[in-house]
Length: 531
Image (cartoon, rainbow, N blue to C red):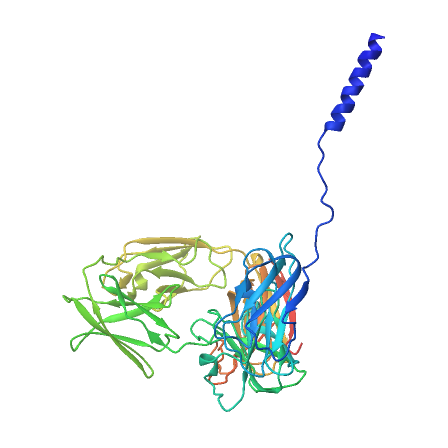
């Protein structure tokens, strides 16, 4: 009997413990339904609108997210409306601060800025529309945005329509807000302008960095349709964004070391000239590129002077500066290899110099291979990049040694190099791949053929002046993006457009797929430029 009582007590304890064990409460299915607007005052799509306040009521608590970036008001208002509250609420109030134009249809596109408070489900592309006239304009215009040179297109691109009337001129994009505006926001390259009235317009796309609906050519990209567009029509427009090439302009120089100044600039430096003077005496100087910056280094031979005048000219541009000089650290000559131990068979071996070089004595350079056999070579100096280039016939799987005696190089300040030694080697041809490219349906020559990485950096370039096979030999194995540039002016570089000149950028066509170049492979590829 005692045993039965013990067993019963144990079972009862287990039962009580099971009943007391905590369990997790299931919340059911996750809410994925966006909020819904129940009421708006005045009513959405109202006409003869004269008020200043709009109240939107929703079926649940909502919150505003990035409303300053997502909200598009068309036509744009000089003073932005006040949207409240910033906390969770069932109501959103729009307070209009601007004077509304007569007989005009206004739209407030909230993008994805209205979300439910609990799960963040967005009320996508919610629009509130009203007219200060007797009817709602209902015409539309659609299209897509692409970048003129890059494969990837910017997000948050504004698309603008400027009305062609008696007040219109080409400077309108710099000074006035457009009649209508929309934005691609963060998830699309397509656009649709809605609630438009019939008429003739200039169609413009703009990466509006400062969000003022006015074009700043220094910092912003622009694109435009060359002919005016007439609404209504059902054309699907394509606009290419480009960054305008800036006119050359210099910046006041600054002293960088005892005998060197830095001169900043915007635009293209090519063809510019820098002259230094002390009174009427010209100070010997030379110019080289300051790497990774829009600046040049001005090297000068300094006498006993505390200031120097600097004149910068290019074409019709001219600027004069006075540079005050202080005693500073003197630059010293150092020479380093451009390549880090391995020389690709496509490349030239080069030495980078910290000071421009004025003399090279090849007789003081010993260049041998791994068998200690002398290698025939020639040298050339790239003054702009401060590089000594070695031209020689490269062999695969070879090891090279450079012994450079003092006095082989003399710099701008007439200082000689110390003894130097560099060792580098080459890989086998089987470590590289080759691309044999056949271009079809090319509209015109010449064309620039480029292989880039996924970030858009150009790794290899060939120039084709007539039809035939384009070869990329001995290239590093990788996945490449291939593009063709129609070089209309034959200057061997891509030229962007210009809004005032109504000039579009030179056409760029991308091959639709990545090209996989593998070691010891020959890839044969047809590129039909009509497709």
